[in-house]
Length: 372
Ligand SMILES: Nc1ncnc2c1ncn2[C@@H]1O[C@H](COP(=O)(O)OP(=O)(O)OP(=O)(O)O)[C@@H](O)[C@H]1O
Ligand SMILES: [Mg+2]
Image 1 (tube, rainbow, N blue to C red):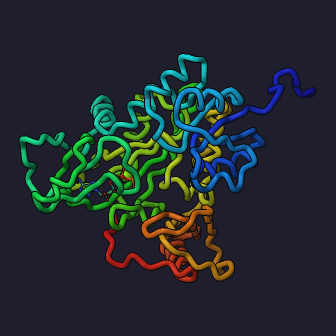
Image 2 (image 1 turned 180 degrees about the horizontal axis):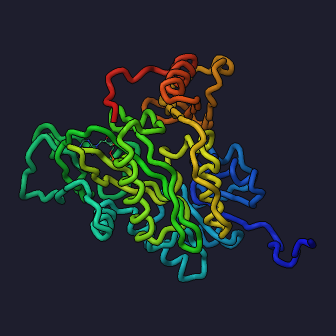
Image 3 (image 1 turned 90 degrees about the horizontal axis):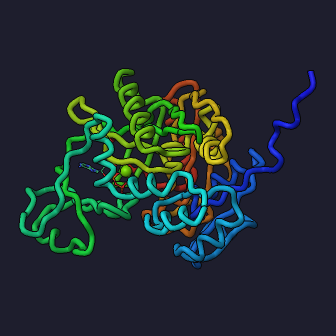
């Protein structure tokens, strides 16, 4: 039978990414395999992307600069939530195709609006109040910046009243109780341009000092908990009208799943999909943004992903088969400069392989961290 060539696209989709860190870098790697055209918009001084992609636009997060960048692409997507919502709305009004949309980006950039969304789909969110200078919260408590936080920045443990005085008064702070978290889970969802949402199996994340140190699959939790997280995440993604990846983070507290936050982009909890799933989160995000059909989210093997934080001393390739991803960043205390993933027929083996590879790189072990 003759292939119907008339139905094939006439040219490759052109995707513009706002941002140039490791997420952009891994999107670039996936774009090469998909043979998409891809380019990046960064600010002067942003490290990373400028050194490795030939298509980099250096500008600001203001309308004229972003309009100039967007004119070269069919659709614009993001590796972060730093462009103000008002600017995204202006870009859309001027005909720029933004995926996810300006409305979705605005809702998800604000943790207070996120939690209203969780409620809308009947999910239980982490309870919070908004800090009001006339009312001292019961301490200890956790203060979270409603916008702009990531990797634990914007999350402050308040132990004494004097700590309250140090919170920036220009920020809207959410106050939460310090929860007895039994486990932390995340679900990476992906929604096609046509609005069909699928997800990867729930993963378990482990943090130290507010920063994610390990992600593994399977979670080791009862299947019913994973399934509940997965169906809740899919409902949230559908209600958010997202296109592409949206990651949902959960806390398991007294057997109950509480939704903590979402991110409308590829996410640290999905990095292990590069090695362990049929289609990586990066490929699926680009497929969605380019209007292509999504790939299978099936996991092929148990996996452990360790973030490489601070200084790393590469001493040749690890002998045990863990795969290293370095991001080309200057090491700084607390900064993620890479990650590695090990896959194996059983999880304990994958975790041992990952830990051994990390030790070979001279990465400090996070002995005291909670298994969340
Ligand atoms: N109410 C809470 N009680 C106990 N621990 C908490 C609470 N809120 C947050 N944490 C801990 O702090 C970590 C970071 O918090 P959160 O995810 O809300 O902030 P973030 O800076 O947006 O994070 P990231 O960008 O790393 O995902 C959580 O993964 C969890 O380990
Ligand atoms: Mg988080």
